[in-house]
Amino acid sequence: MVSDMEVITKSASETQKLGEKISADLKPGNLLALYGELGSGKTTFIQGLARGLGIKKRIISPTFVFIRQYPFGFKSRTLYHVDLYRINEAIEAKGLGLEEIFTDKDSMVVIEWADRIKEILPKKRIDIYFEYLEENQRKIKISGLSI
Image (cartoon, rainbow, N blue to C red; front, side, top):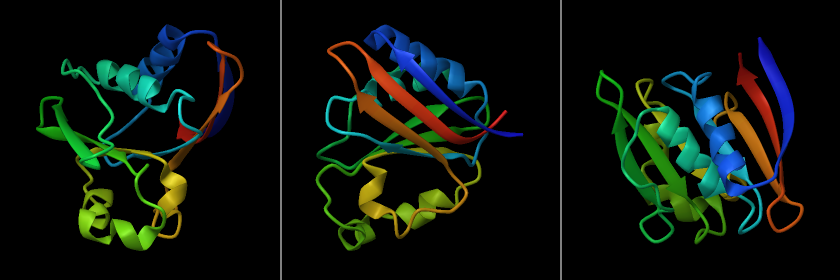
């Protein structure tokens, strides 16, 4: 069943816990497209998601390298963390190999600033919208998650 949900988190810790909780519903091949302004909680959410997948390595945004890879699980799966903050349109992302990782059925892809490549995003994806409400409050809307 595909579900939509909206959550308000009241701290960075709650945002991470939401990411960790969502990780239990993810499967290899999932692509998560994250949308939201700077400081709205995207990387914090991914830190929790990675923890839920059993990734122990520190998760930092790959703003200057565009993509970081984190192995997880028992079958050499990979979490691809993509940050497109420095890209203005899809054509600038051409040389990153995104189409290849989008089709990797053994891995998961999480894209910050996904709106910058909306023309090349797969139709089958989970969209997550982050909204800054107050200093520690975020509204997070999740669309397309299969539970």
